[in-house]
Amino acid sequence: MDYMIAVIPGDGIGPEVTGEAVKVIEKIGGKFGHSFVFSYADAGGAAIDKTRQCLPGKTVDICRAADAVLLGAVGGPKWDSLPGEKRPEKALLGLRKELGLYANLRPAILFEELADDCPLKPEIVAGGIDILVVRELTGGIYFGERGTTMTKMGPAAYDIEQYSEGEVRRIATTAFEMAMKRNKKVTSVDKANVLESSRLWRRIAAEVAEDYPEVEFGNFYVDNAAMQLVRDPKQFDVILTSNLFGDILSDEASQVTGSIGMLPSASLAEGNFGMYEPVHGSAPDIAGMDIANPSAAILSAAMMMRYTFGLDKEAEAIEKAVASVLAEGYRTADIAEEGRETIGTAEMCRRICDAI
Ligand code: NAD
Image (cartoon, rainbow, N blue to C red; front, top):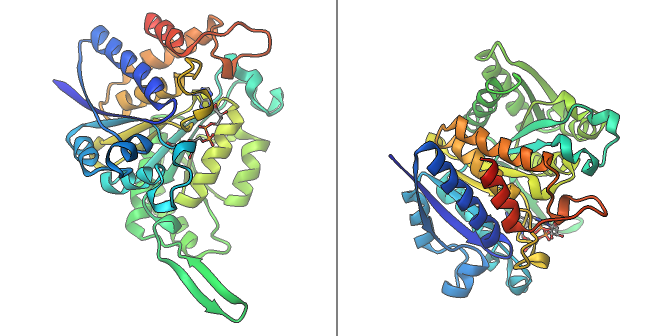
């Protein structure tokens, strides 16, 4: 059986880190006897340069023909002066919409070896952090009605937050399914003391919770959740939340780990299709220098193995290899403490492949 993967290298360090992730996937294929087939497509600045569009139709077709997409990152100073609609980053919203990617999974894991990178006090994070933020990705205020109007106080602008029961039920089910494979705890985050859309969210989340009696379920208001993430992050397993709150809380949770070069993500559609990408951007300041950390892209490939292909052993092999290379003391510059010798992008990947 062939596993079809569309690769969108993108801009800046995107081509470097996706190139390394592809090597790791090939290594997994060799070790476990799978055949991974790659097809390449452009998006972001690279696509603008070739076609004047940030998301050409051909790219969407290539993604749709694949089982999963591996994306690097898009954007950079070269395209910063373009108007909003034409910017490389617009490709990301287009991909989410065109591919129906409604669930964004952002793990925030603090590797024991990198505990020093964590900005919180050691006693708060002792024993490590392992949080999964499940963010709704195709609804809410980012996709709601928007416009401008005139008020007594002058010209005004508005964006509407709207969620249907179906949208909430779908993302809540994803969160509970994830929790069943983890530590069986879901915390739903909303602002139900103020927002009508949050009251609907809370009611549907509670209904879905009834189908998962083994999972401990609770609700937090978003302001409290933001506070608890830095006060006591270990209390969380799966955080279920909306597009807007998830955007903010997933970045907060990732900062708690302190290492942006280590953080993968997945965006899932119905039926196991998914797009996998590092959390970081295109890092134009270090592009082409062989110093970017490829781990986030490589760990995104591990998520692809698990969530799209159902290859749990293969996912674990990648994750363990990354952890063991860290345990042996190898670091790229972004995760090295002062005075420690560092290795480059390609060597980090080679060591991870050797560990597999
Ligand atoms: P960034 O994540 O690209 O970089 C922030 C800092 O982290 C930089 O100092 C960078 O060198 C460092 N960094 C990031 N990834 C690293 C890695 N793997 N290894 C080592 N160091 C790493 O964020 P930014 O600077 O705000 O954005 C740069 C460009 O990326 C912008 O055009 C932005 O719009 C775009 N962006 C794209 C995505 C995406 O494609 N999903 C996400 C965020 C930002």
